[in-house]
Image 1 (cartoon, rainbow, N blue to C red):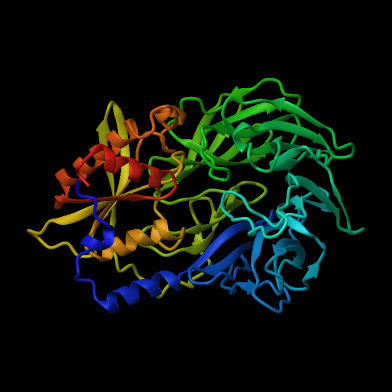
Image 2 (tube, helix red, strand yellow):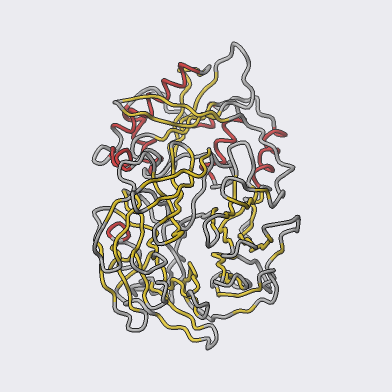
Length: 530
């Protein structure tokens, strides 16, 4: 069996100068995340960093004119890492978590809309995230694990030494009275809260939650309503699959959420549902739609704006509840989603204006804002960076009655009459999707495609059955079939690439991360092709 390490069959034509250029391109790329648009659409905030540093700082810019982005002025004596900026209902104040001067502990700060006059408003000891203002602007809620130092799907917990902590750390909803400076934990101590939203009257939370310990039970979370004054929690919906993004309607009568087969907390995809606040009238609003909803925003009590994975890209669509009709406002070969992990999209209160971090395989990220689908560019921090790797093309093929889609990145240089090796990069999940993004945007899984292309490889990034982008039935198609049907889809994609492009069938490689790593180990036991 031809089990080669990738480094062993890299073409040796890549010079040290070219490799240095690639490293600088990716390491110096300015990255944008945690995008937050003020309700009145006048300002946008984001957390800015580079791929080569761990410092992450909040910037604010007006959405019109040519003003430069302002760094939020939080005093610090050391490295600073910001998280989760969020706007007050009147758009005058920004709240943001920052570990300014204390990398082990984040605190909540408020600043003016222009990033000035910072005020530290908490003295927390524990993990905190996802702040949300009450509708009256007098309180800020956030998820809080008192006494804990973090840890979760994307963050390693601190190394335990000496006496190992035996406490059960459930994540609860904490509410801060801004004027009084008083903090109280509202949700029951036995529930671990994953996501939540304020009711329009600020008296109740809706939340996705499960019994502890810790975040072990996200896959069986239910929807609860929580009385803020009393702290009582009532389960209103127990799903058969996973839940995400519970959001209250403006009239307080309904709750919208996403339900589907999801592999990881924070990577959402599925159908869009509504249910009454009392737990009745459950309705799947996008049943049979060939896409995967990823985030949602109520526009009015009868209309919902949502982002969705469609094929190997994203779309922004509007749902009318009266007849479940959907109107697609924008669609493109990009990755746009809100909430969850790495949110890069936000909308104004009226849903007509948006801000987003946008990039493709060949175009580095920048911030954009404007009417949905008619954005204008706000930043140009990466204007001097150009891709030194090849171009990506959409590739489609059929297998076992499924229509499969993927992205094929070509070598940096393709000469007539030559054949080139190919490496298959299998995404994680498997409930996820490969969509176009700049290679520095998501760590090693993205950086490797630039390195391979620069070294003379084709890179195939398939979205086999089990992926987002073609509806819930497609996402569920590999249930109890891991490594079988999805592997056949991937191998058929390799055949499609060989048929259409100058690929050398004797030089095939396979790699992946997370679920893609499992698939890589499995694949080389099932075929001698790699």
